[in-house]
Length: 263
Image 1 (spheres, one colour):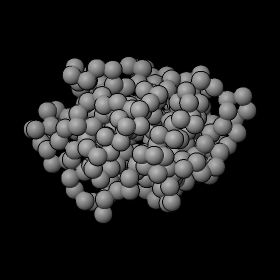
Image 2: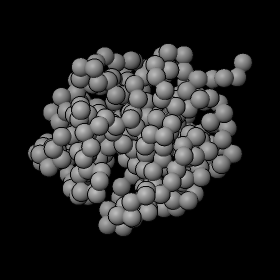
Image 3: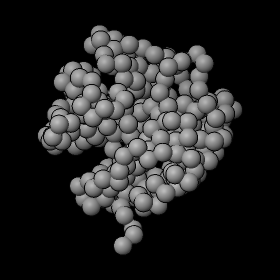
Image 4: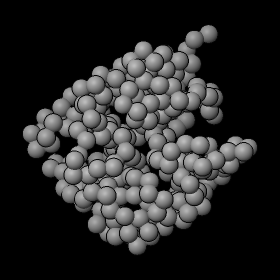
């Protein structure tokens, strides 16, 4: 059946060097990355975990400058109708809409605070397995996305925008002292992530996503060994695991989440 509106269904890296990006992320996440077997996809590379597609690595598109490194794709049943609502709500179109052969229709947009994300209506009615539920360990999610996170200069405006777009509500919050609050988002059984103030935490405005790794300390050691940077963490999260944020050697940011295996 089609994914619920607003469900994260894909993650994509705009890379200046696909080979370097592939080598780095394979080492960190355990992904198996290979070019798409379909020639129409123009060298697009697909990352799999447990044989299931999770993310893509594309060459940076000259026709769409200014897109961030990692982009979060959110599900919609009708790309054109939803993008019309994005514009009506104060967002803008950044690229598309366009059809991807054998995959679906997508568009890159930005919200009223200029944070980029993508909308996609998949051709196949099957459910995407790129995103798995939290808490970690409930099912096999190693290498999959397990959380999304919006850092925005105006959390209240973001709630209004995404609420109107997907029906998301504020489902509680965790106070962070002088950094404001970490407010959980979702609707019904879909609780994909949280919203926080980019100004309060001193971070770039962006959609982030977290990959489940088997050992957070080992993953961060590999990040450093492969030329990346650990920006934050590891910090404890509910359920006994830890989270961290990293930057790859090109500066693209990503979240990691997983247990500590060391005694």
